[in-house]
Amino acid sequence: MTRIDPHSYFDDAQPRTGRWHLRLRVDFDRKVLEGEATLIFPEPVEGPLDLDTKGLAIHRAHVTANMTKVPFELGPEDPILGRRLRLNLPAGTLGVTVAYETSPEAIGLQWLAPEQTEGKRKPFLFSQCQAIHARTLMPCQDCAVARVAYDAEITVPAGLTAVMSAGPDGDHPAGSGWHTFRFKMPQPIPSYLLALAVGELEGRDVSPRVRVWAEPATVEKAAWEFAETESFIQKAEGLFGPYDWDRYDMLVLPPSFPYGGMENPRMTFLTPTLLAGDRSLVDVVAHELAHSWTGNLVTNATAEHFWLNEGFTVWAERRILRALKGEEAAALSWALGQKSLDESLDRFKDQPELTKLRTHLEGVDPDDAFSSIPYEKGARLVVSLERAVGEAAFDGFIQAYMKHFRFQSITTEQFCAFAEAQFPGVLAKVKADAWLHEPGIPADAPRFASPKLEALTALGAGWDAAKRASAEELKALTPTELLILLQNLPRPLPEPECAWLEAQLGLTARGNFEILVEWLCIAAASGFAPTFPRIREVLATVGRMKYVRPLYKALGQTEAGRTLAREVFAEASPRYHALTRRVAEGVLAAYSA
Ligand code: BES
Ligand code: ZN
Image (cartoon, rainbow, N blue to C red; front, side, top):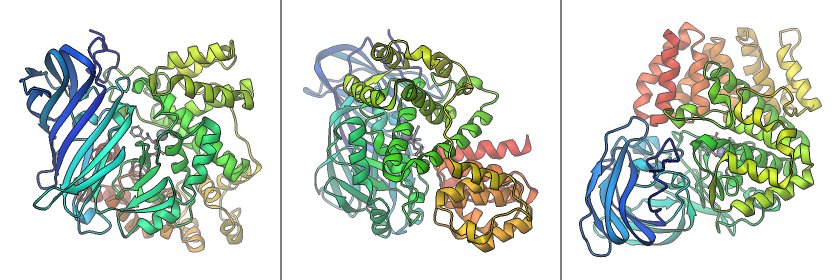
């Protein structure tokens, strides 16, 4: 037996699935996916095959070609991994079909009532499989090393549209109020990139290979917001080589989506909180797009090497930003990253192992290990390498890296061996061992200075009634500059200062959620009551964990805030995504501690 991933029952000594064929019906009444998953092998196989499942009801299994029953056994439930499904395949098996259904509690799915959508008429379903939730959608080798191509037939109530992390392959009526959508993903992907969404959806083309999908009421706004995407693709192609996934489409989800974005291939999933109305939050699109190379083409082998996905992608996102918006914009983006890095280091001060880049996660749920560390510490290691060899040489290295490991899922150790072969001595030069295997941030980590940044930081930190900026100065700030200023304001901020800021800048009515939530956190921590109705509204609808965690935390600073937090949680948590609920519960539990 060769287990290579602490989060999967995948056994590397057993056959690898080459392709999935999914036939599923989306049952909104029972909140389940129900149907068949066929696992297809590149050559005849036999013997035990261990799959990951979580919450799945397995009805039966048979050899696809001849309906021969396949004996199976489900192991005991592990709270993180779920249950191992062992199939005993007869000699000569080319495909095995498992009939099953998902659980209404599947953590990889969120079933939304019509009230939770923009249109309020139709229900909505979306998946979020990274890191280890694909097993709540289907029985599979839920390990990034076991890459699979797939095709799917998804049957949904007529009037709804299904999209997947795959290319469309036609659709047709399926009788009595049902409609079937077909999909094809020809390239081998890690299981965590399986994705499905179903709802009342419309698409708008913003370039020949880019389409934005959203609910009808949002689609025009979304298409405008993300109209620059084609230019991002062209910059990214310059950095990494040709875009290999055919189309780059995006889906704007309802607000309960727990992340900012998810790089599902051919169909990035996005939070609607990016729709600021001024294109000021499109760096998230640059990030998800960059994953088309770093993450989707070259993939982390397991969650213990997650920094390979996110560190490189943050670095790439900021290279794209620098090329399109200039040095200053990139420096400010690094500064925002530093802030979230500092917050994560603080959050994990009692779990320093989680601040290493190369983590050891046996017995640890990847969702609990999630933080800005792999992103921002990872990106700083990438910049150290870039600075050590020079930008031109590093650009060549990145292209060679992509070429060498295309469609592979690799470990930190494989990356290091490759880097050392390309640039002998470079790992020692940047002290890569300290970055990878020691907690915290090395003292000589790269800095990203900019005069603007220093001015904003100083202005924020020294803020008081006598030394605040003039209203005119404030109004002249770009959204990112304003965000950095807000981040640096003292908290609690005296009430008159809160009132003055609100009067000058109308912060509570802002459409840029980064600014809005930063402000609401200041206001919450300062007990500035006029913002409480908006805080309540945001926490009742928005599931993005990046916002939910700090908002509940800030409310914890005052008695009135804690009361509001408990009220809104009691009312809204049944509608939260399971991941969001867990985060909010954790923060609320710490109030009484
Ligand atoms: N792949 C991540 C989201 C993710 C990570 C989901 C781990 C589940 C487990 C995505 O690319 C991401 O990083 N999103 C960020 C955006 C960003 C850093 C610009 C987010 O959601 O905020
Ligand atoms: Zn990412």
